Amino acid sequence: MHLIFLIMTFMSFSFAEKPNKEILVYGRKPIIIYVDSNGENIKNLKTLLPTYAITHKHMIRKRISSFFVTPFNGYIKVYHKDNIHLINHKKCDYNKDARKCSIVNSHWYLKANMFVEDLRASLMMQMYDENGMEISSSSVPLYGYIELVPQYKKTTIKENSIFGPSQREILEQYPPKRLKHQPKVDGKQVSQAIMRLYLGIDQQYIIELNLDKK
Image (cartoon, rainbow, N blue to C red; front, top):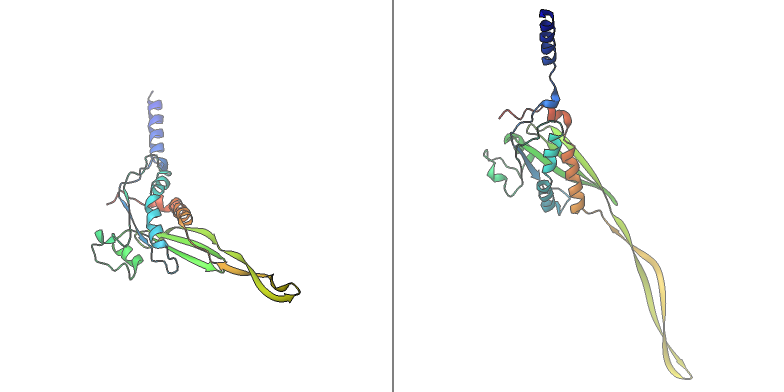
């Protein structure tokens, strides 16, 4: 009887020494993201990026919760240039260096850029944590196109015949004019890039980050 008791006690200690990451609970500390929409060469990104960053923020919750039994229940807030003053307690100049200010005010930072090469381009996004370390990135290809515009020349010829003056028209077709349309960013591409960015947050970062510490 005593032997059975000793064996069961030994087994309980043995199992206790092996932590199971599957039962860890992600904390409730809020996630705050600043969206930097001042892209150098992306005109319509100033409205599209903050809009879709807010629309798809539930993807962050989905990504985090996928590693834990208990879903992440902390709130997620997205700020941009028009409302960052609400949490900019240290009066940092986000127009000058938004990434540095994100470190100063201890929150995440999201940045987008577009790299264009003739009729092909890539919409690139990076996200950094409150320490300025990259925790996710995404890329969506963009394509331009060439429009062929028909070109014609109409010539009117006046003639005199036995029936009197007359005229006739000659229509000549020339090689079409080639118009290049550069790649443009629309809501569909921004939406895809944001979703890929949120769902691609580094797994090791999520597991090691202890959001219970406030």
